[in-house]
Image (cartoon, rainbow, N blue to C red; front, side, top):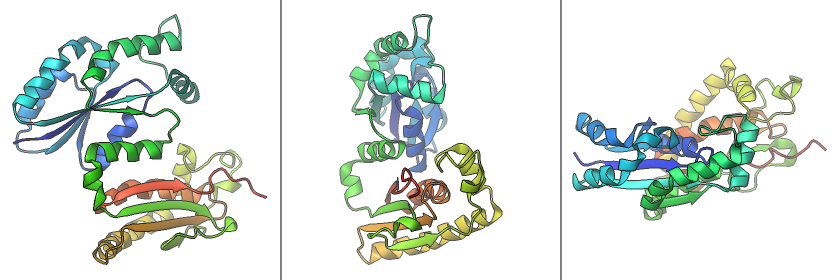
Length: 287
């Protein structure tokens, strides 16, 4: 059985996990941190399943990286389609991300984070040379990187005939999105704005998201909304529509609508459409 294999690699903090989740949502079977030397054995053991496979390979597997060229050649010789997706970013962006998340760089030594990033660039240089796709995530949001990864891996030609779904969160106090085809009001849900420790955060924050999505009414609403959209989207496609904008609105567009749009977006990839999530009013302050 011939497979589509994508090796996701690159620098720590550049967006490999985001890329892996994007491909998983697009139907890939994703494995994290599988040493490259084990890939041929894995493909042999799963000969009757998993047509599309992605694996994350990074500096944690540095002991095995020296064999990467030969391993990839063997896999290609067996007839599999192989892409190496290398994600990188500027030193400035990487340092900022590690500082914001308070994560520890996997190679951090006494010389500090900048030196560790430089060391990792050297370790990963061979895989970068083998890359068929190189993406720089500097200055991009998680949502923008997801779309760039999907466009690069699935191919611009593959996306050309697929309907584009725009999921946009917004605040009713700032007006309806002018381009919205469908609008759903989630102001019936309990508002994190009235929880002091959650108020300064947004729906992208895990605590806020848990507060919103953990409500029983929210779970029921999302189940019904997903069923409705899975019914509607194919019918809009049959009509020849190329872009469908779905608005999710709460009062200010910072908490409830954002959390719900973030949850809804990945599920809509199952419709076969290109899905983009954006948040119109997330940074707007109350007048």
